[in-house]
Image (cartoon, rainbow over all chains, first blue to last red; front, side, top):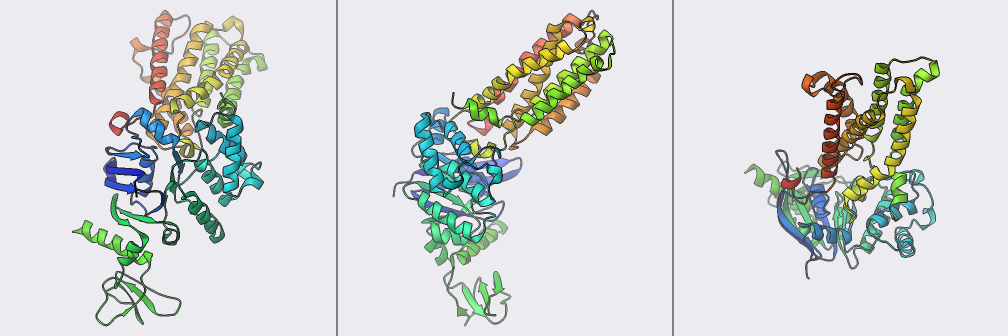
Length: 286
Length: 206
């Protein structure tokens, strides 16, 4: 499949801190999950790809446009939807007014068409009934959906979502999954999350980052396969395991290099993710 | 300009109104109490009012939705310039009221003292634009206001005698001081405008 976003050698430092280290990637239409621990560089990568902050080195293109030039950045921003980790709102605006404001900033000039588009995205995120309510009167989940509507307005070809399900209850998270899955139809979505279930359920590709670098890039099935033969059950916690915990059934689930004769267990995407991170730690230590 | 309406509503009206009220209170006190201030006292009151107004402008570029509305095709410089343009007529009206509130008998030359007020405002805007450019703060206003207060205290204390800015109207250095105020105002305005465009590369920007 042709890549819509491609980056090579992206690096960025904040003082002496290396936030991005030679990151190269290719994204294709559909939802790509971005996993990594806190401080891995996920948000920095998203901010660079969203043209919110320039990289020190490296280059990338979005839908054929190079944001390294003034005109190119303008073109990228015309095709971009960005939901930051902490969106922030003007609380006295209604949901409709706020999304309309963002639509104006996105150069949707014709008022009638713009209002139609704002109504469409508010309907898409299931906020049509409260579009006239002030943002300060909305719940956290609703505000998050207002931010998603603002990102979706103008039908962007590239959608960047930074931990959109943080702080949402399970029902809201489920609703958000539906919205993101819908948003991923026909456009490129990069979804940063700590929720491996979100990635397993939504994403056709997954990228794992640690210490500012890409440690894995592939399908969720390939990430899960990383843990094949490296997950086992035992009655006691195995001291040789990289990670191990008591499950609801009382047995221990261990991840790492199993001892001979261990009882294998079905690996999950989370197991694969933990092992990729562990391999990254070992690499850094070496 | 469809942007004017919503942008007007995003302006930080509370700090602007508080600063405006404080400035009017400062210069209105002698009239309210029936006191007749000396020219040097009137100048001090006007400078106090100008500082209060500048403190309000320190909040002008605060935008709680900054991170959500940052990467949009409408350039940041345009959005910032529009904020300034929306507030400028009100600031001019406010300053006129400030000048009219002080007793005319002791009022210093209006043009020169207005230049001082414009420079203080330009300082606040340049500092706010710099804070927006260099930090991720959505509300850099308090930080900028603090920097402005520190500058207001330190500049009169530390400025060398030959570079004196805060002189009295009957001081022979008054004209030269206001040439310096004019240069400063121009430099700060250029600095504020220079901070507006978003850098394409880090070397160019930070």
